[in-house]
Image (cartoon, rainbow, N blue to C red; front, side, top):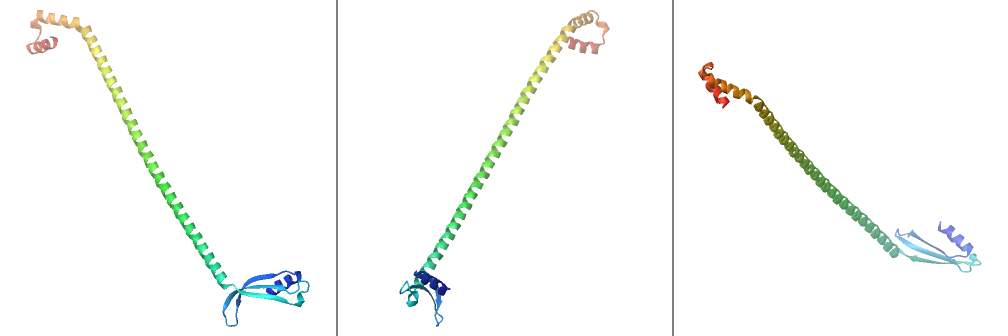
Length: 178
């Protein structure tokens, strides 16, 4: 793969640079950067200059930096998720508290409504009772007034004719007529 890239770059008179992992005969792996260019750009067959650099320390630093970045991103994502969960939990708790407050206020309003309705009903019943009592008193007064001449005549008759009554009845009747 590198050979094709190098040949194409040399044909165009360009510098070819690539980094790749290389395994030595000893089995040691390392990262290298290969930079090649033709000695004579107009005639690449004259020869090439190749520079091989061991970039393993830089690659290792880049890998560590990438791992640290990924770890920081994960930590940030976890912190954001935790913050979001805590905010949602607080919002849910506040919503529950608001619902409880609303429920209690509604219950209190309903209680006051029932008490008010009960008080109104009591007042209406009392007014009706007083009204009926007044009506009854008026009817009784009307009956008494209507029957007063009869009562007076009966009293006069019993005074004039005491023999007409039995003793026990007369006493009871006289008590009623006084």
